[in-house]
Image (cartoon, rainbow, N blue to C red; front, side, top):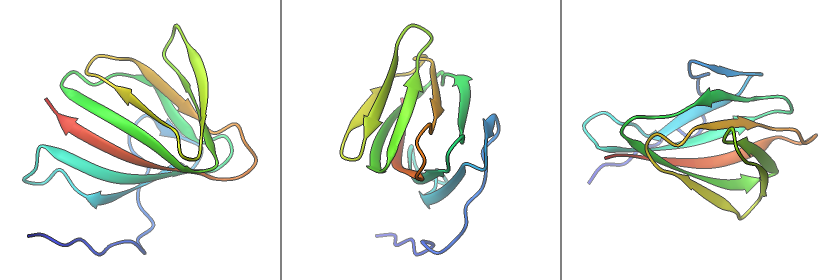
Length: 110
């Protein structure tokens, strides 16, 4: 069993993310083939268009809303909604709403 208690930490801005988006590792990749993160994006915060070669990612919006763009489709998820990106699926994120967007991001290495 492992327990992580870092919920009060501020987090970090991952590479290729912008607008003061902060990600907090709840369960880090270290020694695992998965990670669980909380991502907080203020208005205008997000991540540039990118994909992952061998990671699947689920974004579960817990608060506010978050807009996604895949290069061929654009959609907005609200609290309680989720999306799964398989490896190589391109995705761009941005919070276009006035309130912060908070998402639980689960990443699994394939």
